[in-house]
Image (cartoon, rainbow, N blue to C red; front, side, top):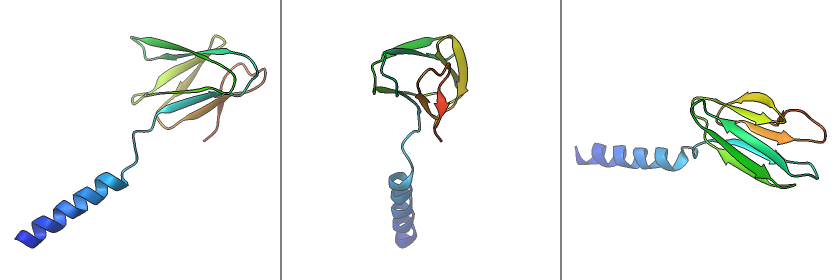
Length: 94
């Protein structure tokens, strides 16, 4: 019984190590100008001012709207978005 308990503990520990970290929605500003990005979770909104080359990550486990220049883009954890040139919404990178 001791051996099976030890093997279970080792397997559980391996799973914790191998499991990926919580994925988040990532937005990077690839333009030469400062851009405002808002994460709309329904009951709360978080605005981030992104300098050129800067990025932000925020958790959206049940999905959220990412707003840029007045347009919403539905996102969920794991999405990687980029603001490019004169785009009116982020571009999905994954």
